[in-house]
Length: 83
Figure 1 (tube, rainbow, N blue to C red):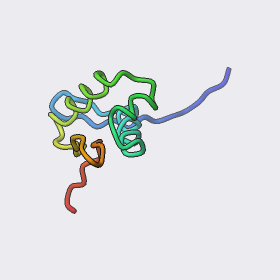
Figure 2 (figure 1 turned 180 degrees about the horizontal axis):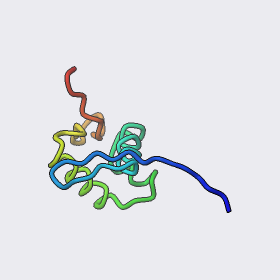
Figure 3 (figure 1 turned 90 degrees about the vertical axis):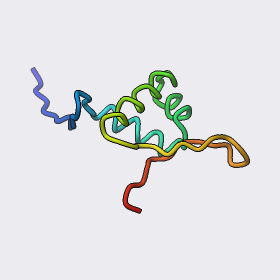
Figure 4 (figure 1 turned 120 degrees about the horizontal axis):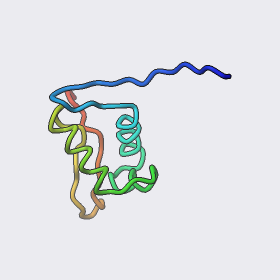
């Protein structure tokens, strides 16, 4: 038998719990530059990823800054508070 120890951070507010999987999602949004790219990179559906971001933002406030398409093509970036 092999024992492994581990730790998964969790942060909860207003009934919404942020897990390591959510942090992975936010990192992917940052790395890919969009929710769509993050969904593809993580093998998740875009609608599910977007709903999860919306759910977390409802409890914790803005997590991403969304930019509509245009000459730069739009995308999403982590929201920078206090800049």
